[in-house]
Image (cartoon, rainbow, N blue to C red; front, side):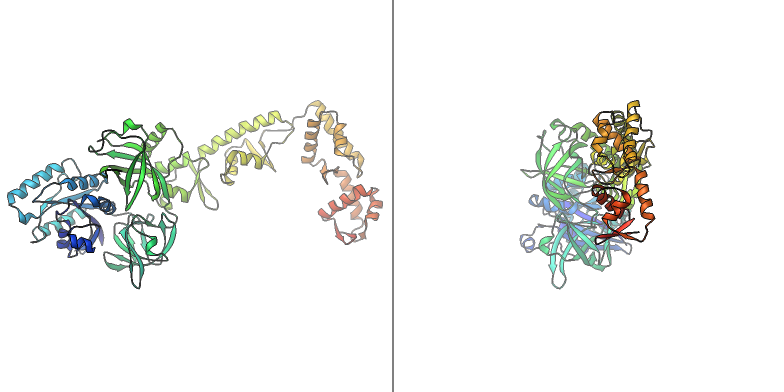
Amino acid sequence: MKSIIVGTAGHIDHGKTTLVRALTGIDTDRLEEEKRRGISIDLGFAHLKLNDALQAAFIDVPGHEKFVRNMLAGVGGIDLVMLVVAADESIKPQTREHFDICRLLRIPAGFVALTKADSVDPEIVELVALEVQEFVAGSFLEGAPILPVSGVTGEGLASIRETLIQLAAGVPARETTSNFRMPVDRSFVIQGFGTVVTGTVRSGGIGIETEVEILPSGRRARIRGVQVHGTKAKRAAAGQRAAINVAGVEVADIGRGDTLARPGAFRPTRTADCLLELLPSAAKSLKARTPVHFHAGTSEVVAEMRSLVGSAGLKAGTGGIPVRLVFQEPVVLAPGDRFIIRRFSPVVTMGGGEVVDAFPPPKMRLADLAARTRGLASATLSQRVAFLIRETPGGVSLSELAVRAGVAESAVEAAIPATAARLQQPQPWLVDTGWALGKAEEWKGKLSAFHAANPLLPGMPREDFRSRELGALPVFLFDFVLSRDSGLMSTGEFLHRSTHKLALQQDEEKALALIEGAFRDAGLAVPGVPEVLAASGVDQVRARNLMQVLLRQKRLIRVTADLTFHPDALARLREILAARKGSRFGVGEFKEWTGVSRKYAIPLLEYLDRERMSRREGDLRLVL
């Protein structure tokens, strides 16, 4: 069964609640004060089955100017508006403000109900209808039905039902496969059940025994039960009014302004870049950093409004103004959300607009931010995904990108551009290939300069280079960049150009041979490294570098920090032990076999233990 959400709008005492009661049989004034004063103070809810295939939920809003904040908490998710104008009073101040709010929220369709039609002459009804027709000209209600009705006599109720059926045919089906999100407009306790919250499901769906996240607090809760339009259900989906019984949370911990959401799918923010429309009735000029009341979904927070085009760009009666809103409290937003702003004092509606980016970059030139905001506002999902990947150095996880785009991960995956690579790491990661190619070129330049300055070194230490170049970015990005360009190569612990080769000067070649020869000729009674390097014939820095070359090429082997041996000498030592396999020996015997002093014997024995050629057993060793 298709569900539509219908919201009322209009001036106080124009008969909104009476009309809803006449249509549905439900009195939406539930508070004792409302009944005592005879006016609606808070949101009221009712439902009506229009036919076997269509059900309507009504959100009845208060009409008094003092309760516009409550009205705003109810109209954010409606499909149709029923603008109520009393035939005996015509258009009044709250008619205008409510209508401005509906237009700013881009409510797509609706109709006008001329209530109390039984209390005035037919000529008056016709006159008021003409006034309303002129009032809505040029708006989304231009040409919409204007229906005389009486909540007392029942006149016109059938026409309203028929109009609702006709308009519902044009209401597109909501996307139920996206991430679940429901702004909470009411919370209360039912004895025996616990905490219950109500709201209009904005996206996705939710079923019983499902875990949800309460935002902005981040608390987790479990769904114990669901009702849709007053009837028990297994699931509530986008476009439906739902009452949800949540377990694991007290009623004091959740209320109007909170959001129930799929865990991890949404995140509170304190900053949003938006496109703003200011009403003609707004002040002619607004100062920078103007404080405003911000309304989106069921939430209301104080925000500081910063124009991205300068104060001169904040002109009354204009739209498409790029602004940044900085909130005093965290609020849950997604791209495409509509909002209303009201003057901080006196509290009147100034304008509204669309959230473009709920997680904008913190630092950027104003002109660039303005262009960025306008560009994202007109972008398709694929274009938005490509842009967010491209502007994020090192890429972004699939889950984070879904949060920033305000859609399900599956929708992001379907929109991944050809210019991005999907890396399957502990979690899917998306990175712009252009960024990787740019990094590879940059690194090749740095390595070329390093090789020119250090021709005897094999390259730059890999981990030091990665840490310096990528900082806190994931480690796997380093190998991804290397894979983009064959001119980069990682060998062991060093990073170098693939074309880099050891280039020795004539005196360095001679010194290299002298150093190696000194250790080869010494056998197992090797000299000290400083002594050998001092006799190499080159300066100390180059001599140390040549020593490193020999060690890397395995032409010398460092046994301890002070003792280095030639591989030939160690090979002969292996032959000595191989001839005595299975025998046990002490340090004295080892000294006799090798002809070395204790200075060399102990380090060599420890080396043989490490190489698993011998094993220490007390004071003796076993040849393995």
